[in-house]
Length: 272
Image 1 (spheres, rainbow, N blue to C red):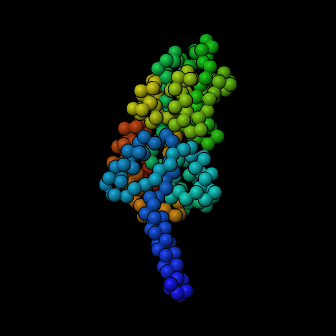
Image 2: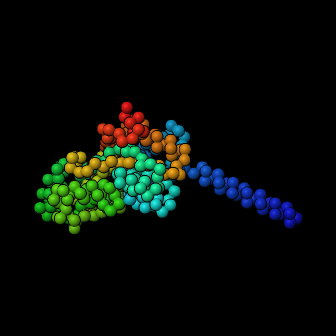
């Protein structure tokens, strides 16, 4: 083979490799970051979305604070479904998003205990207080308040109830609220405070019991979602799908609520 033909062959081969690489990248589903507490509901919503549109998504679950740190350092997520508003607003103030997004659900807290626990579950946490007084609580679980909104709300609730001084040394922290729920219901702790959406799921109901904590006892958990500037057509379509009645019905089934008055025109279209 002549030098010219060899060079032409190598160039053609390189072009083919690049074409295949670019095609693979183009076909890769968009990356979505979502708070751990919405996993079971969002898995169902994503399945329904893909079934109706043929468009797949890649969803990663974790703590909202950790995702924000990753996005600020260049992680290629196209959309964030946070467990509260603070982290989305933080991204917007940092110039990482073009808008401050919209509320897609309101989260709720639940007191949980494994089936072998003696903890009496009551909405006002009186049973927990009595168990602490009797010295029967050695481990209690919440998500890490430093970067998990449900952990922050749980700690604030325990502080407001005057239980934190007794509990602080007994606290086990999950990296996110999903891990906290696993810890709380594994049998190695007497109980914990986690997301109602997880506690009420079929997976966790097999492991323990729960009771919803009245929303009047803690600050609202307004879960906000936002798209990144790099969001493609599929992500934009999914963002709109999250505001449809079909998506809301799934969220309702997992214990989420919704604001009485929407804070964005997009959400108002769903409510009306």
